[in-house]
Length: 210
Image 1 (cartoon, rainbow, N blue to C red):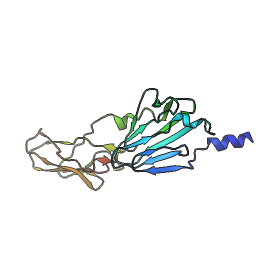
Image 2 (cartoon, one colour; image 1 turned 90 degrees about the vertical axis):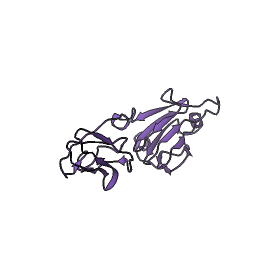
Image 3 (cartoon, one colour; image 1 turned 60 degrees about the horizontal axis):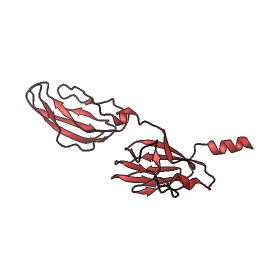
Image 4 (cartoon, helix red, strand yellow; image 1 turned 180 degrees about the horizontal axis):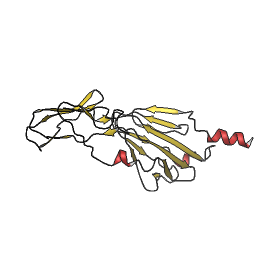
């Protein structure tokens, strides 16, 4: 029977999935929490010592952010010591950005939640970087490929660099939605920035359309 017991406890299926759009406190029965916030939300973990006296000496919580705003994961407070738990030894909070998922592991005798996967967050999603493309005439060009970017990304800045003296508009699309339109100046080598960005989070399946 030990084989059956091991299989039943190690299976990766989730029986209790909770979906939330605003502030929520994780309970012992939660296994996966899907957050879909449109504004920053706080997700409070239960205190690890609340596992004591239950059948769960160790608990794994999956938190997924499918929304457009940050999820601030906050540890609960130990009921015996009145001291807040931590995350990865010292963090008092952990900010989960849109399109990120983490696994947190806690034990009944511990005071610290461990971020097990993925940690650290992949650099592509957290480190600023620049992508440039060039178009001639009226030829539309994909910023990435026709399949889109390798991950959902935030677009912070968009600039157009004139290569000639021909007037026109440069439009950046996310799929069929316009992110910004920049009036191309007629002086070659002049860089012009976008003043307003819309639909600036996504897979960037569109491209420059001069």
